Amino acid sequence: NQSSPTMITSSSFGTHEGKEVTQYTLKNNKGTVIKILNYGGIITNILVPDKNGKNGDICLGFDDMKGYATNGPYFGALIGRYANRIANGRFTIDGKTYQLDINNGPNALHGGKVGFDKRLWDSKVVGDVLELTYVSADGEENYPGEVKVTVRYQLTEDNELVIRYSATTSAKTVINLTNHAYFNLAGQGSGTIFDHNVTINADKYTPVDSTSIPTGDISDVQGTAWDLRTKTNIGEVIHSVPGGVGYDHNYCFGKTGWQKYMARVEHPSSGRFLEMYSTEPGVQFYTSFYLNETGKGGAAYEKFGAFCLEAQHYPDSPNKPNFPTTLLAPSETYLQTTTYKFGVM
Image (cartoon, rainbow, N blue to C red; front, top):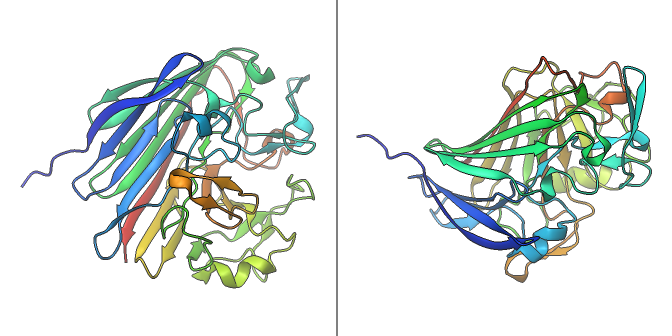
């Protein structure tokens, strides 16, 4: 009884700067449907069944390109060249200092003014894989080197969304790629995530200063609000996180390159769960304090209305020699595999 592989179809999703945007639909025989744009590699929809077999869309987003053209929260998008923050938008390679656009307080965030999330990627379907490619010009957003990036999205019959990244550069540069999907396992637009339970399988995290830049310390979660190693109800802990904005922190998993079980989030009343695995050394757990948008179907997206699990190297790594390096040389290939597994308990 051979199960049929994931089907991928495509349709138009409007235009961006005069060019057509394509939406790809990935569908497996478990009833899971994932929709992705070639603009920003944006995951627009993730439809997964609940415990009663009823499909719900657990991914926040917009109905059309009008929303995604600005996309302040970076809903569902591929982030690059550098996901998360770089202090003062500045870093040095081989004695040369590069100054990036300052777009988040005093810092550079998520690749700049026009990051990978706001670019039209080349796209093609290869079997059950959606393959997106983008060539970032030397000097784009003031980063050195021409960087060629490939991202492959695959929906498996085990209900996993597997995202494989690879990148090469013509000159020494820094790179940190992620996807910025926002999840609510009760369904997008269904209120806060206080009824979700979270486990993050990390002993360490990176404390931050008042502008969300890591201090450079790698600290134990033990005895802190960041200790989520055992299943924890989000509503019970979110208001006790120092800083007053809930979770927006990087958890540390050590070495790059081997697949690690990082996190699990459960929603008891729907029965849905999500697990995350990645070869990255860290994950940013963000509970959407700054969320304030009108989303799909006119849904009100409000503070604490979603969570993100962003696989990454640590924020500000280019300025923190003790963090795993984000340097990429012309002789090297950047690789990352991150998997989101969906299911019911």
